[in-house]
Image (tube, rainbow, N blue to C red; front, side):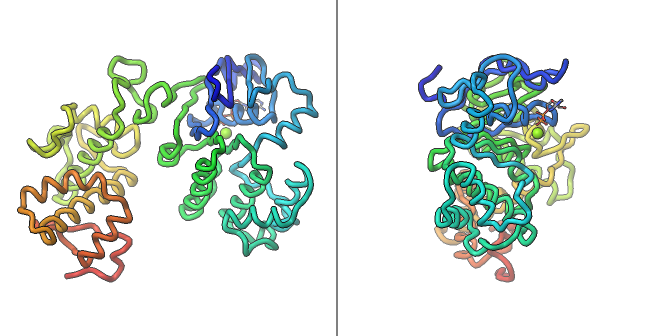
Length: 393
Ligand code: ADP
Ligand code: MG
């Protein structure tokens, strides 16, 4: 066992009658690690979370959390274990409907130790609900209820946070707020195991683990951080030969750009006309890779759909393609207009720049340039959030 492992899972099996909900599962979680737990419905994610949280017993194997062997705890000791070590965040918020936000958090304090109104209101403040203390759950939006549930789960500063699809019922805005809370928890050293179906959320974690039929299908700790989700190459010689993350993302962006441009030109994006490395000299850092292989990984990531040799962007792929194209064309404008760099060099630089511009910088450049509508070659620059009603003709 590595000394930093906070959670050790060894040959864990949970049977419901003949069904093995978790089947000979083994992995460790390091202290402070943020792990995204993925896998299809019924693959055993909730069962695993419940066992780790002391809500369910194991059939065989071993689970050790903070040096404590869960199988050896009595009912009473499990209650204490849950109260002292674990913070649960569920998809359903499980708030007591007739208690206010503040009272819901104080109820959790009551179970842990003693109630402390100031501490409870500070906890609600931290999740941005300082002005909602006396609201009943029914008077709060779904996102606000989830934040009360998070404040409640965190009231005892649990070292291990178990979250079962915490953003599953939330709209985009609240999802972003809740994820920001998790990022802060991660930064302050909490260990997080979070069930999610969303690859974008999973990518924010340090590590992704995927279950299938109760066993470990895939673990980025074994396969490398840049490894695509559900990689079809897992366990083949082509898989995980190096840390491929940055190069991969660059390749994907590059292909997405080409598919987007095909769309602008109104022609189908056939696999044969797409290239991974670009025209000579454009992306010299990238070794050759057949476009078809990169595209099949992009289809696993739900960026594109492949049909009869033709590639189409998914809504997510389309958003990302649009953003890359925008960054590229903005960068070209910047280099050409502001730095008076000649055309081919501007294009060259833009190819590199498009991968490193953050959303904030994107908006600053766009505003600085007066929200231009086209690149120096007359191609449209997709508008950004900053462009509302401000575009230069
Ligand atoms: P997931 O959270 O990945 O969707 P679960 O852990 O909820 O999966 O379930 C794993 C498997 O165990 C499923 O086949 C499910 O039907 C079964 N299962 C879960 N809980 C029980 C239970 N209390 N009794 C019987 N079967 C269960
Ligand atoms: Mg589940």
